Length: 239
Image 1 (cartoon, rainbow, N blue to C red):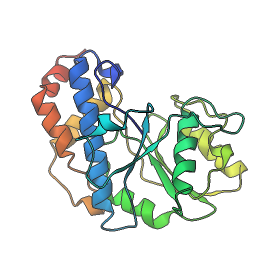
Image 2 (cartoon, rainbow, N blue to C red; image 1 turned 90 degrees about the vertical axis):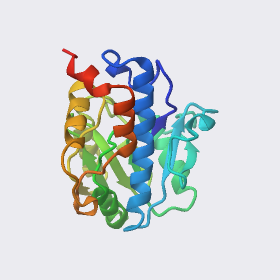
Image 3 (cartoon, rainbow, N blue to C red; image 1 turned 45 degrees about the horizontal axis):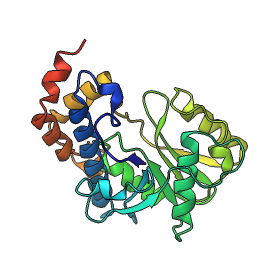
C-alpha cells in the first residue's frame, strides 16, 4: 500500500527534523526496499510484488522506486464498497478486491513503512495463507503491517478506527466474529515518527543476520538515502 513519494506529501510526521525532500527520498527508499524484499522472499514462497497505489494517474511517479518485477494496481478507495468501510479501509478493500479478481488465491496487504521487515516473515505469509484464516502482523503501535486473506470479507474493514492504536485489536475481534481462524505473524514496527526512525537507523547498524531465518532485511536503499541526506545527524539533533 503506497502513495507516490513527493516532497510535502510523504512522511510529513518526520518534517521537521527532516526536510520535505529528505522525507520524500526516505519514502521512495522504503518502497524500493519493500518491493526488493518481496522479490527476495519469492525465492521461498509463491509471491508476486504489487504496489497498490494512490492517487489515480500517479503510476509513473513510482518509476525507479520499485523492484523491476513489481506490478501496479490502483487502490485509492474510489470504487463502491460495502457500508461501514471508511477512510483507509476503502483503499485496503479496493486493493484486495482488485488482486483477488485477477485470480490470486490469496492477498497480503503490506505496508510500505517497514523497510527492514525480515524476509522470513514474507515467506511465512506465502506459505501459511489459506481459506478460512487471516494472517495478521501487528505493529508495536497497535496497528498492523500485514493482513493476509483469501477473501474480501467486509467485516475485516468496516468499523475500524484507522490510524489509531486499536486497529489490530479491532481487526482481530472482527475476524473472530466472522468465523476466521487467525495466524499471528511476528510483531514488527513501522516507521512513521522520530522514535521509530531512530529504531530503524539503530537496527541498520547491527551486524547482518540470515534474512530467511527472520533476520532483518538489509534495506540498502534506505541506508543510501539516510547517508545522502544526513538523516542520522538530523535525527540525532532532534528533541
